[in-house]
Image 1 (cartoon, rainbow, N blue to C red):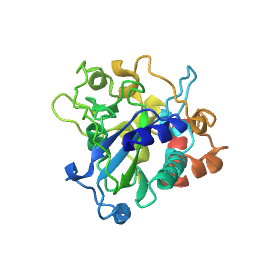
Image 2 (image 1 turned 60 degrees about the vertical axis):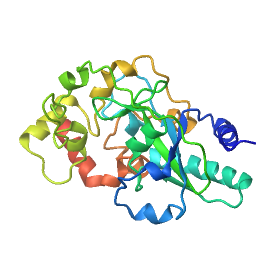
Image 3 (image 1 turned 60 degrees about the horizontal axis):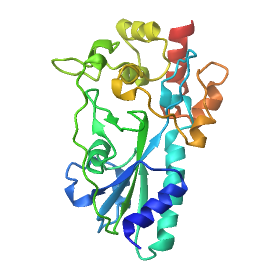
Image 4 (image 1 turned 45 degrees about the vertical axis):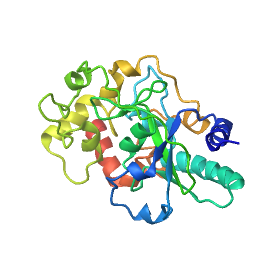
Length: 268
């Protein structure tokens, strides 16, 4: 059976339909990461898989969308292990190594080369089915898979993300991501008065989805079908649930003190 067909059948088992293959030899801009030692020395292909996390709600939330659900590192890595094991069952003489976020791979480039999405003006990948509300998982292997057709389309350049960016990090002249509200909520140490006011004005303890929420490419997208995500939604981080959520949410790595600081900015 064709390698790609076997891959498709395995991914269908987990209802993962948005994926592609990036030719390993085309990757030149690797990131510094200690996990690079896990990439097979004779790597030929990188399987790139989209994991949607979007959960719609009309209710107020002080968390960005990906932070409302179970830590995607935990969820994605679990799926990648299962998929890799399934692949090893078929291709016994080959290596399959999964990576979620923390890797030497330039994820956006690999995602585009694998045809999983194209880059929007806000620098997020956009998928036709899930918009930009998805994260990527990769499986590096020394087994050859035919590479997918790259997706180098452009977003419609409507400028809504620029005009609505609460901190003006997105700018028609030059973007400055040090101003990004999401970045500010994750910044350790003392914040400036302007940064504190930015958090207060937007009511967010962690992250920011404004550029995604206003993007036309995110209109009528599908919600996540991943059980681990849609069954774990918590809309708000509070003083009461902080100890629990910091253990299993993507923001937990930043530590209790930073999260308490952001809560204090909003509620004290």
